[in-house]
Every structure is written in structure tokens, then in C-alpha cells.
Image (cartoon, rainbow, N blue to C red; front, side):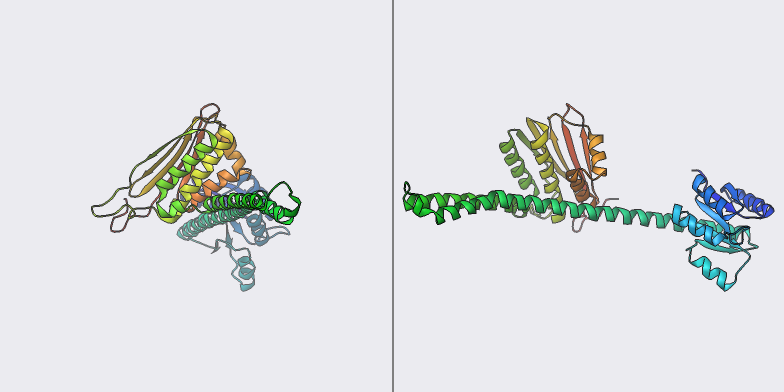
Length: 367
């Protein structure tokens, strides 16, 4: 592994050379030496060091504290101050830049090494925290977008399906006296048929929002039922493959069911994959495979359709232009799992979910 790169900011050449020699002896790479505040900013921009050793008192109008603030704000590079001054006012100003260390001259090689190592460690931890915060922010934004998309879908279905049925009933009730060619019994039968259609649509929407078979029978039957219905609607054959989860003697089938959150994620990811197949794949055959072990669950949805460029799909998802893929990957990520998509034009597509399971009761976790 390459040694950490350090930028020295010191207006005394002899001191700078001595510090550089110490850094080399400690296993660091002194990549540059700046003698002023503006020069340190330019070199930080060009060299992108892992850490800056900054003297506070520098020649020119810009001192080390001002330069350190600019470097931190612009490049998120950690700064350790090196100074012979320990006045309260100086330290108070330096603290405002949130430095990663403050070494008083003269210092020992051991002190220099310890301060640098702690600064690098702290910066690495902060970087991970920033990345996690950015991912959480992106996830929150994606969740909001998915919720809005789902609201739009439900609103559209209510308007186009339930709304149309209710409007037809209203027209029949308001205008029954004008229908000279139909008896009241015929109008009543027509209204009952419309109501039955509306009830079926409500049931279908309710099942889409939360399938009762998932709660009542479990993941495998729910996936099988959904896949068969999707195939019947879209004209492709379905093969459902599953393996029974491991069972200890005396346990019933529900003992080792995955947690509800895992079952829901598997169901929704399979639902999204089957929806995409119906819309885009032009497939004639689909395989849904579910494998559960004591500590892991794997779901695959494979089709023999026309396929697509998976890399471009991932690129669109990273730009926020593929809410379906975003939804699948984020559902898996929230459970510690991941989704992969393998596809090429003309060679079908495989959507694969891999997700860890919590250890069963009285069973040790895997090593």
C-alpha cells in the first residue's frame, strides 16, 4: 500500500527540510513544500495530499489558519497545525477550522508520528461518516420519489377504474326515467354488474398493496401465485422452483419463515421483475427460483426475453432515471442484501436477490 502523502507548509526552508526527513523516516511521503498560504491552497488542489502539516505563522497576508480553513472547505483535506505559538487567542482561532491536531515546536519524532496517525484515522472515520450520510440522503430522496410514484399509480387506478364504475352507476340512477327501452330490473342488474366490477378492482388493488397470501401462507406460495397470475395475464409460461427451509425435528413449517421484512422485500422485488418482463421482455418462459438456508435467502427471476444492456440500466439508475431498479436495490440494501441484474441484448435477463437471514432461535450464527 502506498504511504500517506503529506504536504508541508512552512516558510522556513531549513525547518521544512528537517520535517520532510522525519516524515520519510516515519514512512510517509512528503509530496510537496509550500511557503505561503496561497501556495499551500494551490498545491493542495494539485497534489491532493492525505494530510497537510501547516505552520500558523507564514510570510504574506494569509496566515496558516486562513489557509487551513480554505483547504478544509474546498478539498476536505485534514490539517495538523505546527506552531511555536500557544497563545489562547491563536488556539481559539485555530479551533474554528476544526484541525485534526496541534503540535507545538519543538516536537519529537514520536509526537509527530502519533499526531499524524490519529489525524489520518480520524479523517478516515469522518469520510466514512460523510459517505454514509450522503447515501442516507440519497436513499431518503429515492424513497420519497417511490412513494410519490406509488401514490400517482393508486390515484390513477382509482380515477380510471373505480371512478368510472361509480360514474356509470350515478348516470344510471340519475337517468333511469329516460331509459324507455330497459326495465328497472334490467337497470338494477346492470348497476349490480358495475358494482361487482368495482369490487373486483378494489380487491385487486388491495392485493397489490398487501397480498394476504403472503401473510397467510408464506413467501413461497405467494411468489408462486403471483408468478402464475403474471404469466396468465401476459402470455408466458412459468416454472417455480423452491427448496424447503431447513427444519429441526419437531418444528413446523412456520418456525423458519423469514422475517416479515425479508418476505415483503422478496415479494416486491419479484413483483417488479415480473412487471418489467410483462412490459418489456417479450418473453415466453419465466423461472422464479427461491432458495432458503438457515442463514441466507436467494431469489432469482429469469426470463428468455429480448434482454437489454445491463450497464446502461445501472447508469440510468444512478442518475435517478430508473425508479424500479432503485426500489429493488434499496429494499435489499436496507436488509443487508444486494440485487444484481445480468442481461445482454437477445439473451434474456436474470434478477438475483441475495439477503442474509438472522440466525434461527437456539441456532448459532455462521462463522
